[in-house]
Image (cartoon, rainbow, N blue to C red; front, side, top):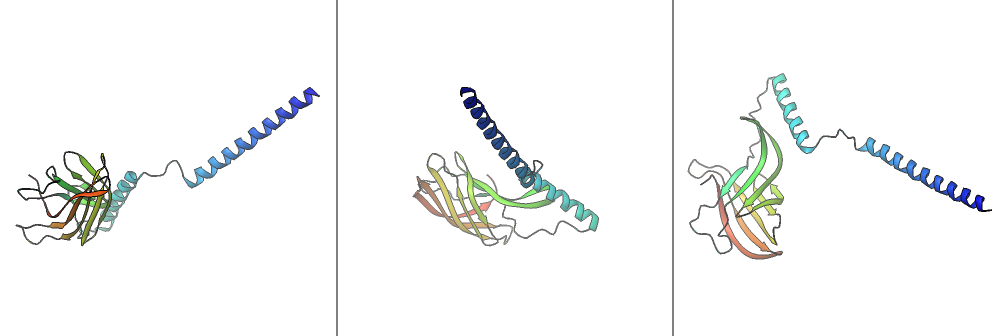
Length: 188
């Protein structure tokens, strides 16, 4: 009677193991079909896109200089002498909308960027269009920034392209400082 009990327990354990192993193997097989190990990362896909664009241009003899007019990219500064309370450490905003493959060839990428103060606040969300720019930064120690503004394309050499709008500084999700700004490309 005792031997039968052990044989039954061993059989139940073996069957349970085999069912579990079969389920794991089947799941792994289906996963390998749906998500191949050789899938490209976003960076690899971007490089592959750029390489294909270069090869296509060389093959067809087309120029890749004909790029979209939307080039809201670079560092944008506030050139006011004094900044309002709460923004004394503001340095600049960097927006990136394309990646250079060669010195005169670039490909568009999803917008990204950061707001630079004593700390680097990377954009958590950003939207760039021919008319508007909005972003919200990540939160660092409860502080984050939010901006909604309008893009003004290049008018003349003196003015350049600008972004004007409302910049808000948030502390633990509440607005602690805000100002209307005009951001201009360039550096100090």
